[in-house]
Amino acid sequence: MAWSCINTGTSSILNGLLDRFERPASRSPVVTEQVQPSPNAHTSLHESLGVRNGAGAGGHGNYQAMGGTPTHRPLMKNDSSKSQSADDVNNSLWKGMRNIAFTLMENASQDAETMEASSSIDVTEGVDCKLGRLQIGLSYDFQSLTLTLKVIQATGLVAKDFTGTSDPYVKILLLPDKRHKLVTKVKKKNLNPRWNESFLFEGWPHNKLLEKTIYLQVIDYDRFSRDDPIGETYIPLNEVDLSQSPIMWRYLQPCKDSRGKLGEILLSLSYQPAVGRLNIIVMKCKDLKAKDITGASVLHLLRDPYKHSTSDPYVKMWLKFGATRMEKKKTSIKMRTLNPVYNESFFFEIPWDKIREAAIEVIVMDFDKVGRNEMIGKIILSSKSGPLETRHWNDMITKPRQQVAQWHLLKD
Image 1 (cartoon, one colour):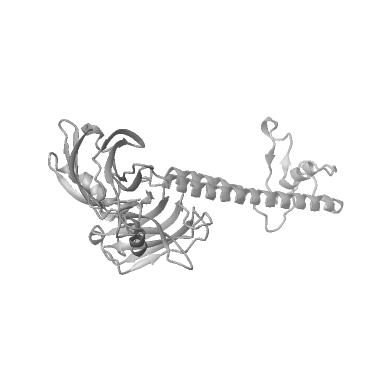
Image 2: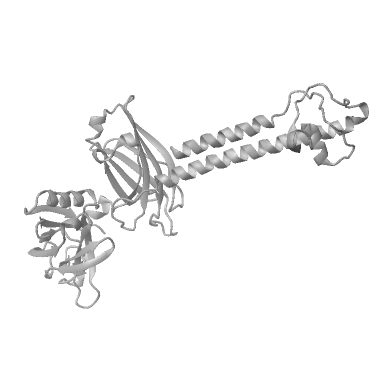
């Protein structure tokens, strides 16, 4: 609103300048109190504008009416050269003022775009998994029942090509429908691409849209092999005020295509608000990714290396506030199994007024006696994590003192 007022005031001033210095359609005789023969451009400019120096009340100069009756003598034939010079100066001044006016208007337009862009930069939602982030805009026309999604840009994308870059594009779905997909253009060799592409979903009543979720997946295009997923994000429309036409940033999360290969973990959460205590039960894991190759002959390994692969998994948990790790817990180690059962309980002290800011990072590790322990996969439980993790966390808060169990796909 303030910027609109500034733009209106600026336009009025500029239009006034243009009107003041508008080129006259035909030149009328210029009347002056005195005509000096000096060729100085300043004097010629005063002649062309009819400035009366030292005249009037108080001796202040002013503009005299053009096209009136001469008070001393009209311009004579031998003054034609000075009149032509005055025309040239007047034309130059007119052109100069127009150039200045248009430059100011152009700068004002650029400033408006800059302010609009800066005002749209909001706090990025989600957990930073170091995959990059995506900026989008949403708007809804209540008369035509049309939802408009604008894919604006992405920043800090991870490189998927051996050249140290990516060729990203965005795939769009309106879940739960997975049959109809939309895609943006491919931006070659760019880790900070700008698309500015809009997509319309027509004929959708507002109450029906509230049941939908926008799914966006950033993918690296590969001409000679399968495209590589970079990251994804979900936007439940029942959490967005479409009447405000919001513009938002979202951190990209690891894609399901890569998560399912790492295994799953079953966790149970319970929170007691009165004492500020969070209870986590690590129940079990299944289909974990193998990190060790043991217990088989060389011939058997050559025939089927995955059949004899295993891991020695344990679960490590960190209580975090923002990026700061506060407290660590871990389970026992289960040797040579990809489907460990733990049923081990842990407690974290989290005051009620801090529960929305807290997060629990759950990491499944492979124990190694000789080398360094390797991570198999992880998840982050919080109110600002992925859709499944956030739902589990919110269920825990809305059901105090109750155990809420849920399976989670491990991420890399």
